[in-house]
Length: 289
Image 1 (cartoon, rainbow, N blue to C red):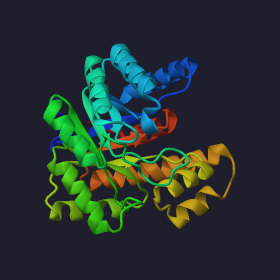
Image 2 (image 1 turned 180 degrees about the horizontal axis):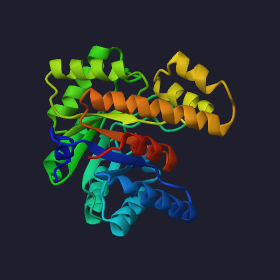
Image 3 (image 1 turned 90 degrees about the horizontal axis):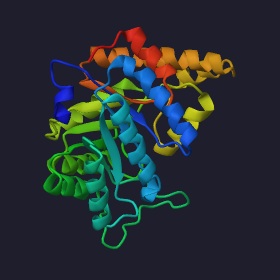
Image 4 (image 1 turned 180 degrees about the vertical axis):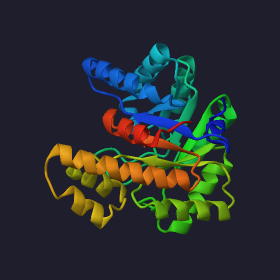
């Protein structure tokens, strides 16, 4: 299937995002997580790609294992950080060789210790350039790009952020997957603004169920996503893992239920290499693609 077809009017797409573990032992633990998530018959799995390609080999290893063991469609993230165009081409060729189906094309965040994106000599500065490369030279790949309901933290304004997204779409993206968010109104307003700007491809909400207050506060501080005050207060009523897990799953279940009722084309879960929280949300909703 073409990437956009998973998010058509007569079905709800479902995908899960993994990240590359550091050790072979952790890889096997992750495969057990994938096996558990397969209960929900996801359309594809994605795997992140470290700054500067620091997890390049591990990313492809994870995806190849998922495809060989479980037969799922796979998508690799790919960023412009620290890579020349020739290096990006080489990665795309290798990804094609292992049977990768889709690419999540990103500019990428600055490497650890740096505050600004630095274009390398012979590399790209913007994600739309990467989308164009894929579309022109590797047309067999479906392409997903990132969207930001609360505006990218580096964007000077919401208008400029939307212009950047429009360029990625115009260069050939098939699907927009959003950054995590916790106020559904932000997502619905974002979709309205995208449609008004002429962006008509599916806009898939990215969901990260909260299981730990301190962890999610760190994550949202990096991407500048807002946490509702009442949600934070509820999470903080008890410090126990079980309490925060329960509150987080209840919130995510209600959030996704409202999104589905509002007509979203599907859901992309940031699972953080664990299955329990996402599984409980999907079981509660009796989610069917």
